Image (cartoon, rainbow, N blue to C red; front, side, top):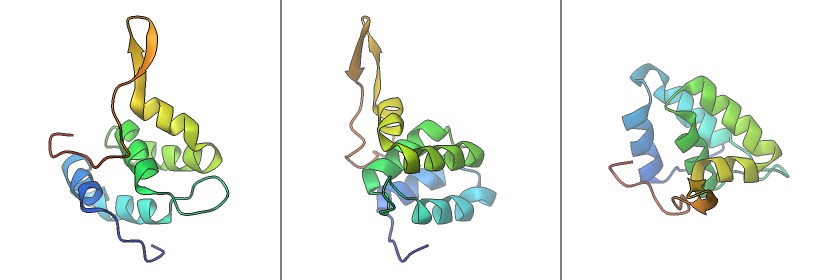
Length: 101
């Protein structure tokens, strides 16, 4: 990892949703995640990638790669959904995960 300290809510989410044998790999992957332009991914983007990964390391790798090319798609897939035929924001992952997430 590039010296990034992950927020506690992200570390706790990893502990709750990923197999113990994968958690170190997940944390390393999150620590090396980039946004378009090559800057380190921020906590909002990391939460989005985690949320759509379904607790699967292979999915997270795909989502991290996808985020590096276009983070908007990752954010939309993590935060938005259809309600009454319209796209609406269902959650705001710029805020920390709750213990029930």
